[in-house]
Length: 421
Image 1 (cartoon, rainbow, N blue to C red):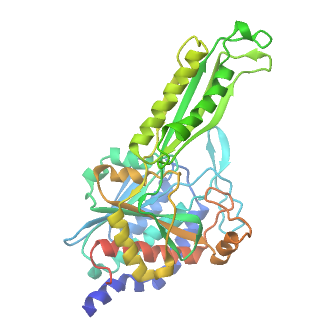
Image 2: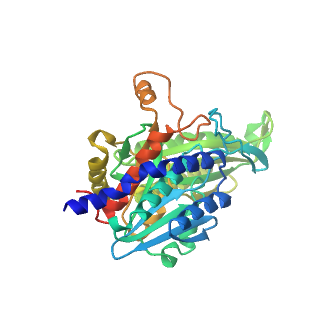
Image 3: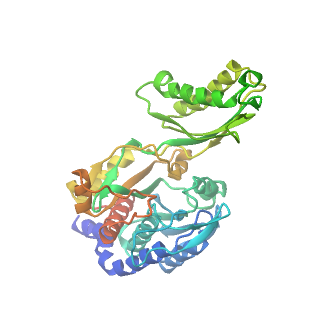
């Protein structure tokens, strides 16, 4: 029994020796971000790290994705996933290793920054791979490391799956990932059982009218008025059609129509984001938008039905309750009671959800990233914290990195059945 405990703890004892290399990797990744679907150099860096640890690595999966496989005897297959891409955000942290990278997106020159913490995700992921590869006598099974592109666009997971991720490589029994949290103290791991992130759908509605002079509205059919009425009607989908205990959001983020103050245009375009958790609620929102758009058009005697297009984004992240409970128990033993906190689910999106499509148990854990004193001050009325996607976002580097590596390594050991009990 004592030997089993020592073996289970062995990987974590190697963190101090690995830390300086991981810290250097973090600073390098932070200073050299790449936008979605352009993460070739980033993937090369991670692939080189895994190859040096003895993983069999395959690149260009689903574009710029990579997969590293380490077979270590009989046992479960455990997948650890990281995302690779940065954001079109100009960094303003003032850090000595701040990104000065620029790129062209949408025809415009933009700054590029790891404003969502993917640099930390990659470093924690590499750290867990390092400790596990250097301690193969402490666990048995197959470790699958997935480096996923284009998370920020919600497309990378589907691209890897379409590229036969689970056919070309060992199919995992479990999948685990971590995501930094901009309002949680470094040293703390947050968890949610059940739904953690939302379904997201982008909807475009084009309303058609009959153009005319603004001084003679009776000779026209005004799509601006149609659009105004539709915006108000859409609010009833959540407030009057859904069960109040089923969370959902309908936001009209953009309306475009017309060219001058005295011209009634022929059409108006609206762009919406729909957020939900349950599949049936997701469908009810999509159906409701279409129905209400058609109803407003019919009421206005529009010359033709609206055009409604739906871009289905990532599905909701659902943390398997049994798996999450198992990991929380193991992490509590390793990190202590005060380092595990149950947090609220959010209406943001994360395409880690797509790996669950075959019924595999998955869990995404939150990784606290804020200097504890600043987190405490913000909770008591102090300065607000920069959120992820902010040009000022910067994790409390060492505390976040060390906690993340310990947590992700412990999670893997638990699923291999060798975590200290």
